[in-house]
Length: 276
Ligand code: X90
Image 1 (spheres, protein in one colour):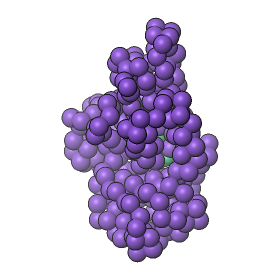
Image 2 (cartoon, rainbow, N blue to C red):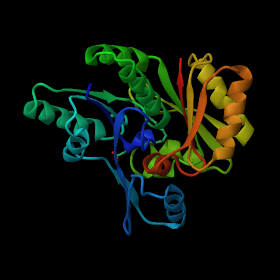
Image 3 (cartoon, protein in one colour):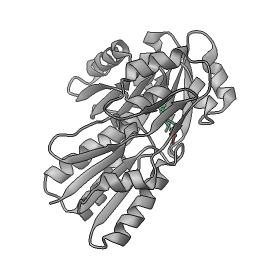
């Protein structure tokens, strides 16, 4: 069967084993440089550029044409986008779906608004991959992935909300909180796909404990976890240990955020996608 999974670069994935996969890059722009969030981007270089840069910076989502190109000639397309609550990426993908179906009425496209980003999107993609590889039909995959999505969540810890606030993705008042030295914010993707602050936390250990506490509060009990970190492997490993102490059999994977999530989570940020 001719399946493809397409995702915008907010999923932090560049490739996938065993199933065709295309990543559609978002872009990060300053007044002096544009960073395309594809495999050629050196994320650490971008983060260090941005930490020195004092001017304005922003992001841009893909357009319909970029999604159409990523769909290629596939008979069946599954497309996972960053939350429509914070980006136009989902709308662009839906526009591409409409055009694709008009041009090829025999083909099928299913666009998923993740209402989230990073590791939760990566969980959805991992599940889509499994369903495709197990030979399920398109309609059955749509049904199962919709059900699976009801059982995935995202919790994050950020050291700075500067870029989110400057781009209108979180209120400046909320962002001010994180400006206070040593204060980190723990939050979740709300059910509307927006950023919900849960609490302020002080110190790295407390932050990790707060993440685990909130994961359990949201219903986590040993399912699959993906931790994506913005150049903060040490905290990601410590978090993995903490979860594994409570749930020794949990499958926990660590990856670094790519460009888009690194830009908004900022250096040090942790994003945790998990099953409930
Ligand atoms: O269309 C665009 O230009 C992209 C805008 C994306 C804005 C938000 C990205 C957030 C990345 C930060 C913490 C997680 C928040 C998740 C809330 C659903 C990561």
